[in-house]
Length: 144
Image (cartoon, rainbow, N blue to C red; front, side, top):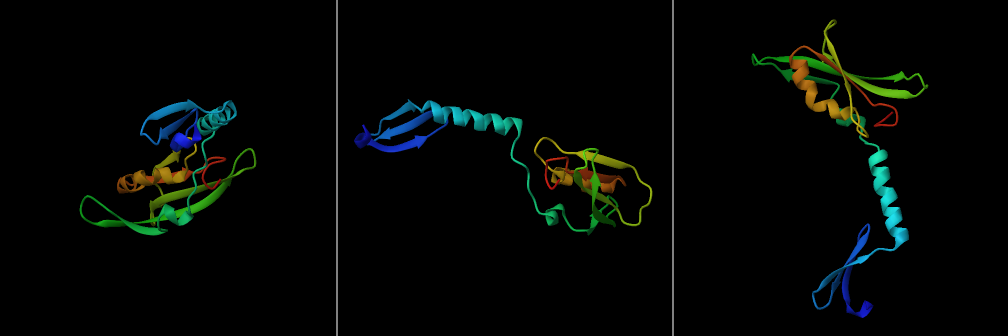
């Protein structure tokens, strides 16, 4: 009975009921709540929430990267937008060595429900090697 319950934790399919005497029991949730919970789990897998961030979290527009010989090289980040075949705006960032005209480039495409910030751990090591990094927020992800 409700008078015996000290605490109820509502879960997806079961409620955890702690009674005043310290005993714990698990009781089935209502079918409506269980069905709603199942739909929420399916949506989380099929279309997780969009990754969000502020553009300044991509790092500074100009920065130095240390090299193995203890010197540094000046690098820059430039942000730009391209249009997809479906006429959607895709937000992009290009990290490169400053004043470098020709260099190989890695095109970094993030995982499901992620964003171009996923590329950040790879930027400095690739710039050290003289490789540019271009990251794209794909349609429906990040800032695109």
